[in-house]
Image (cartoon, rainbow, N blue to C red; front, side, top):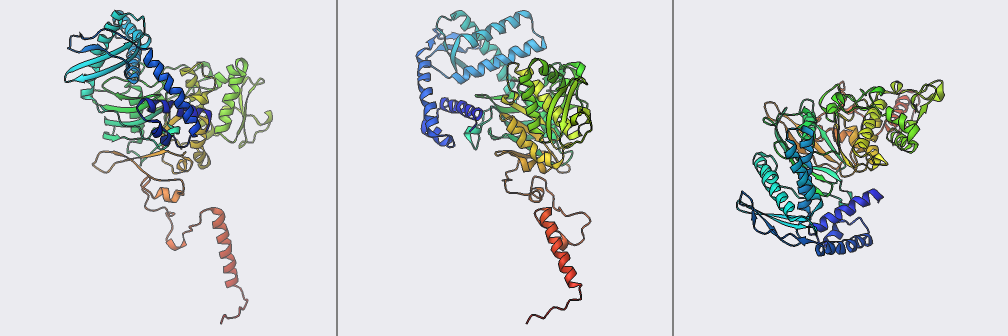
Length: 550
């Protein structure tokens, strides 16, 4: 098991341990990890949990009532996950206030203060509801200001929780669902678990849940105009929120979207009408992936370059990787080589990328393109459209990854969710088959959610992939269902006639005699059979007399 995957498994081991699973249950859950490793994790975790309990200082603010009749009470060690959730909620609230600027400076400073207290002074909190009464139990760090903690807790109850309660009354998703996975050691850092949509484009009322958190790929199929792209856009809105900076993506008075997703060590629920934990580690791409920004633009994230734009508009312009490559060539050769290796891995026929000082630009050595002069190197514009589309998309991914995590040394270590509409566009079947595996091998902690009209990418689907199908009958609303199918041993003819594609006939349209249809598994086998048939025909039509068989 690779180091990165083992690290993810370790984190999920800690989460399940904190959730109450016994060591014996954990050994069964992580059956593909050596018992010696699990014993080491367990031994490390036990004293850490004991130390945390021993160092918690209880804040003596019992029976402090707020105007809603709720209370903040003292208690010993309580649920750390609830505090993490509260911090995430305050992170989202503060980000939205700073982004949209619709609050006064006094309100902003108040939220900043509460945010600081919850992040710096609290060790754990617990929330209990008895009827209409809410009780908050707090454990704080030694020396923390009791008045600040009391005020911050009351603000959190009155403003954050009360707002959430009102929003949840109108929300599509309310309750968290259990984690579903096949392989605990392969769970993703970020993964979608549930998507519910009402009144978005052609999707009137659809919901799909219990999506496994160890699925590296989610493939969405369906005939044209059934709602595949709309579903992908709805997932983006659910994970990002109904706005992308100053652009409104959806009218929440008409449309409702709910998404439950795994976010590092916690599960979160977003409802378009309520609190949104905007997933920063989210990238999205529409079917048009050939337009890139000019070098001179220096990849500004505005207008056409907003995170959502490519998925929602056909004229989106992706960030131009050549500008950063040029900078890295001179200022950070190590990063230049890392990115070059990424491209050469994902595009097997791409042999090299370098800076050409004669023409002062980045050039490419494509094994599939013969070019005279310059040792075979050519500019981006002379590459095949399929190659350009992959370089454009992966290049945009890399640019945005470094914008999200500037201190990251290697973009292959990035964790997130990437949405791609019509994965197969511009790609030869060979590359369609290779791309899912190559992308997952290069970015092992990214969950890819894609639509496709082609059966070929399914031949390269990594293990634990999920398949969704969007359907729509005349005069009926669209539906989304998960198709459970083991594709590992299936050929395209079987997949095409399965419920994934619903083709009832895969013979050539001009065929008039089903008896003449060739059923060989490869063209080589077909050629050999045809050669034998020709020889038999030659013998039959010859003048040779053969003895009768008695």
